[in-house]
Length: 183
Image (cartoon, rainbow, N blue to C red):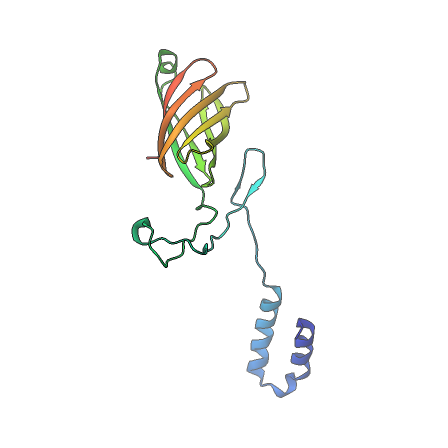
């Protein structure tokens, strides 16, 4: 039965329905007709494109047991990866040029898909870029960031978990840093 037919049948039969039921129908009918699903972005990438979080669904044949161990019969609920995780980044000086600036802090947003957004401040300039896992390597990756005044950094890292890793960064002026991701 279409919504239009349903509304007409309710309106025709209201004289036979007690007042309390008519009030209930009057209250619930607009809610049912106007309800909907809204998809809201959780953020945007460096190019300004919206990023949406999707509810994970079970993958047939995949299994996971207690404490993340694989066990038969229990479906995995992460086909596209988990929710993005914002991780703190610390860069510690590794040469005399980097010592002039000291420890740098920033963040990387791990999209749990092999890619991430990378940003931190350097000498009053915000460097923004991306981190990408190396093809064929589950834990190794590179990150690049660029600032509005032309400063850039290139980092190589290795993740020990999706939330923690370490590596090195070299800046366009020759400064070198040890990179620590997560806590």
